[in-house]
Image (cartoon, rainbow over all chains, first blue to last red):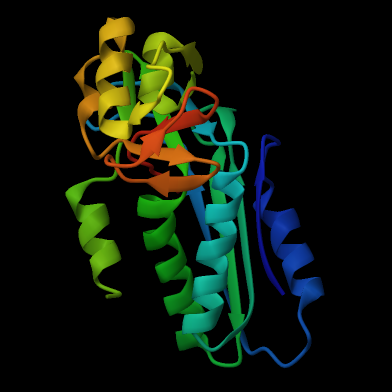
Length: 152
Length: 81
């Protein structure tokens, strides 16, 4: 199962993991998941009130699917799942949930790592932090691009 | 011409603006200048190639021609996760 989707509903990692495990074919020996959270403080240490994720009506979901498919093509994984939030989030809420399953653990670890590096730099989303520091649009950092470049 | 904007650009002038373009159309590079002159609140970002232009969900180069009946979308640098 290779799946990716966008939602405005709050994400429940435990429920997503349960569904992912149920979907597996039975030949897997490893599942790796990653949960990304909305931070409570910005890069300057100032409190963040909310995070807004703007999305494109078609290109966003398409980019998520392409990243999931590229992951499945690159690593020896049997299942990949990506669920990404859009809309308004409060600090501590889940922005993104990813999972990868494989026969052996290394492929699942690497697939989840690759997924996140691609999502950080290529998912068609725009993030704005609102809080004590004002309103700031967040773009990928140099470190994000360096992380992405590791896979070239 | 309808122009759609996202992220920081949408914050500045809204998600959709109308831009007067020549009847014969113009290049994407010229459209960037027209958006900037007719909606100055958009700021200089619209002129930068890091803001990508899309027509019919496909990226288009600055040299591409667009006509008044088309809708052009401008996407600032993206970041998920």
